[in-house]
Length: 152
Ligand SMILES: [Zn+2]
Image 1 (cartoon, helix red, strand yellow):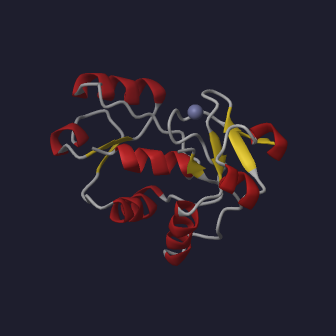
Image 2 (cartoon, rainbow, N blue to C red):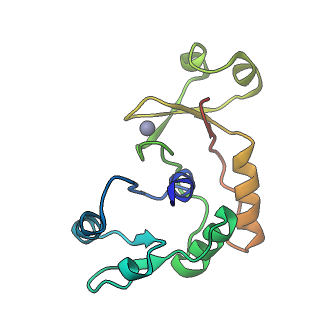
């Protein structure tokens, strides 16, 4: 399953469709119709003709992202997208999310974003600096200025 990778690709700002309910035929059709690169752990699917695809060799998330960096030229600095629904995130005033985030998060964070599609609230969290540091470590540029974890 590539669900965790999909979540991180969205947080890194990449428009990422993920649907574990689709079969191979539907995945291939969607990738062709929308001009997407199909990421799969299925060698046969990745080898289908007429598809832009990438066989994801690694099982470990960090190694998967490293593969994306090397083969797709992944880079930080894009506007993050909603990890859950792939929607765009809008910067919202802190006061607007007071009732939506845990008190500790409200007290300790200053910048919040909200998904325009599903309404989830994001803030700069503990996982993001880790991944951003990894991307920087791989020589892919500066740390993005803002992103966050999913609301619990
Ligand atoms: Zn969303």
